[in-house]
Length: 195
Image (cartoon, rainbow, N blue to C red; front, side, top):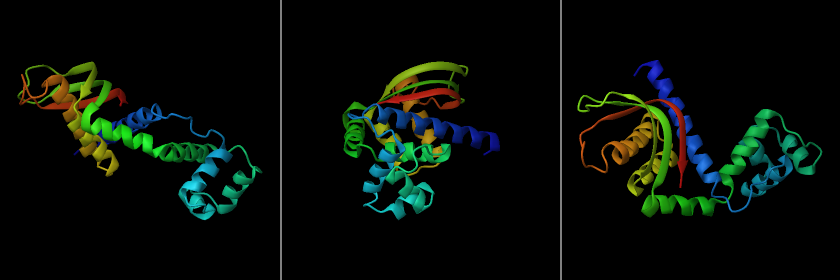
């Protein structure tokens, strides 16, 4: 695989993961903590009350964690601010996220909305082009995408799961019509996912 293709798949992986994070964020029934102190307190409870393990998780010293918890320091640097926000969202309302994942994988599926270049294999008759697509993917495809994300799938595996879901729902119409059509997704400008 060429370096350009590898970079493109890594970029698509980032867009897929970001799309899933944004979709989960919309599920929250209560807003996540916003201040650095509140985020530190929340994350410390998730770490079993250990400031040391929280410091290791965030990549800072234990003294830094203690300063935020005591209120002595209030405004984190950009790197720490981003880490706090990301870790808080990852841990916030796990049951709500788990229920949504279960619903998507068993009955509801996912809605994927994207603007990307779609190309076709030798079996296809359509020329590749940029397309705006919004499609509801089946629960089986939703389960494959979520499982790939949760198991730390490679860029290629995650890309293939999303491409297959879109191809099946939009181009192949659930196996009918152009059943043998091979679809490639490239140059993704936008990718949104909804539960």
